[in-house]
Amino acid sequence: MFQMRVCRLIVGMVAVLCVAGFMLQPATAARYKVLVVMSYDETYPFEAEMREGIEAALAEMCEMTYFYMNTKKHFEGGPQKAKEAYALYHELQPDGVIAADDDAQAMFVVPYLKDQLKTPVMFCGVNAEPEKYGYPASNVSGILERGHDRESLALLLQLAPSVKTFGRIVKDTPMSRADVKTVQQDVEAAGLTYIDFNLPATLQEALDLVETYRERCDVLLVSTLQGIPDENGNPMTNRAAIARVVTAFGKPTIGSTLSDVRDGALCAVIQSGQEQGHTAAEMLLKALKGSPVPEIPITRNKFGRRIINVDTMKALSISPKPLVIRNAELVKTEP
Image 1: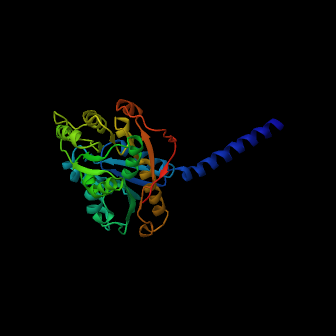
Image 2: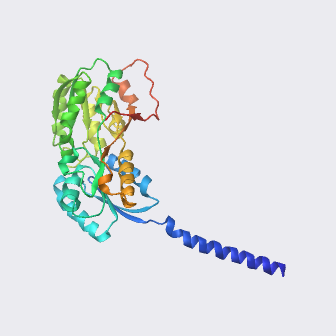
Image 3: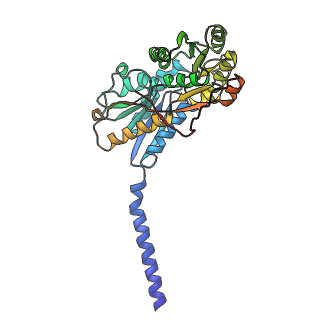
C-alpha cells in the first residue's frame, strides 16, 4: 500500500512538472520575428561582428532572418537585392527590422520602409550623416558608425613620433566618401599634414597609388578594400587586398578594423561591430516592447580598442619607448 502511494505521488509530481514545463515553454520561445538586412556579404568581418552583437541581444527573445545584399562585391546589383529583401519582408511580416551599413539605408530602408510602415527599423554601421537618409523618421532610428582615426593617429605617434605626412587609400563606395572631411580634420588635429586621398577602383590602381605614396607620405591609412577586383577582375577579400597594399607600401600603416591590423597594418584604435549590432538590437527591443521610435534617439558608437601588430612593428624596425596597453581595455572615445 505504501509503495502504491509513493508511486502515485511520483507519477503526480511528474505530471505536474510536465504541465509546468509545457506552460513555461512559450515564455522562453522566440516572441518576435526580426529581419536583418546586411549591406555586404557574410565574409566581411564587420558584418560578422555586427551579427554577433545582434544575436547576443536578441537570441533569447527573437527569431532572426538574415539577408545579405553583397554590395561590396557587386554594388550594381544592390537595387535588385533590395527588392528581394522587400519581398522577403512581405513574406515574413517581421515585427522589426535591423538594417546594417549605408547601402541598406539608401537602397532598402529609404525607398521601401521609411515613413511608409509602422514596423520599427533600427540601423547600424551608418557612416553618412543621418540627415542624408531623412533620419530620424517616424519608424527609423539607430546607431551611427564613427571611426576612431584621431585616436589611431595618437597611438601611431606614440609608436613612431617622427611621422609627419599622411595619405589614405580606400575602395570607392558611398560609405568611404561620406567621411572624407572627418578624416582630414582628424589628421590635421593630430598635427600631421594631409597629403592625398584616393578611391581606387581596382587592386592594380591601388598598388600604383602606393608607389607614389611611398615617396610622398610617412604613413598610410588603408581600409575597406573588400570586393576590389584583382588583376583578373575577381573580387578580393578585405584580408587579401589589405595585405597586398600594406606590403607594397613598406612603411607605417594604420587601419580601422581588427582584420586590417591582423593582416599587416601597424596599429589602430578599432571600432566594435559587436557594439554596433548590440546597440541597434537593444534599441529595437525597446520599440518592440512599446516605446515609440521617435522617442528612441539616434546614437553613435562610444568605444574603441587599441591594437598593435607586433610582427609589423618589428619588420619596420620600430622600437618605441615603453608603452603599456592593457589588452582587454575598452577606451571610451569623445563624440
